[in-house]
Length: 327
Image (cartoon, helix red, strand yellow):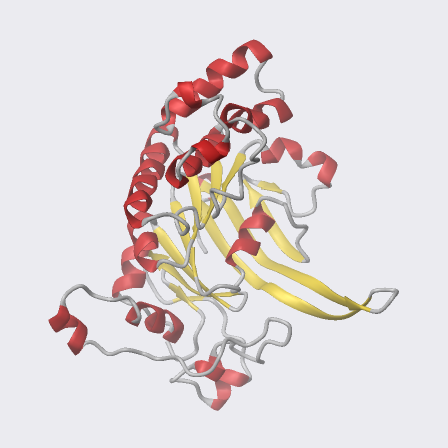
């Protein structure tokens, strides 16, 4: 993907993340779960890349590899020009300072025994970015940035609502002034009205702080609203990636077309006239994925060639990439 290197925050090349399956007393490896299987993409500075797909397709694993919570099996991860894919754990700390993460579950991602202020201030302690005297002022500032009263700092998580807890999670992600934030389904556990508030907050923070987002989600409507570009994943591979408007108005991969056809339209007349694509069968196991194109057993356009050729992610014009020989 031809993007000026000066404008790239993250570049992922041929990323693979396989988890071993072991058996027996000596834990012999008998198979592998191919969670991420040869994924490549870039995230430009100050943009939001949305990553969508069914549960289990490898979206979260991709985000955790970028954060280096997992050591990738193969491939390269360039963060702001530095290759971090093989940096030892003891040397990854300076890079992690420039990354933040917002997690899916605002109830499970906060320590119930800590105060909200302690949770937000923890990264500052770990990276030694504030003295004890400065800590409280910095945490109070973060509370104000995310729309919480600094007077709430001494409360514990169970005293907050779901939306407020997610704001605490966002404040924690911002505490070290990161350049990149991995948003791992940050609104899927919230009520619809609260989702809108959190999405608006993330957009405001991006504009004022110059943040870059990888926004992982399965809600296509949310991704369309917040993303500059959208990547679609299926069974460990990216099958399509393009500008947000292009993906939603001109989907080229059969899987993307099927996903978009499932989004309900609030106009009954339009809903009756459009064609719904119903996928046959179940998602194959990542332990033993199909040969060739992973999607071909469920694809209504598949030919014999699809089971033999792994389609490359190719540019079909205007920065629209698709991995399908029929596109």
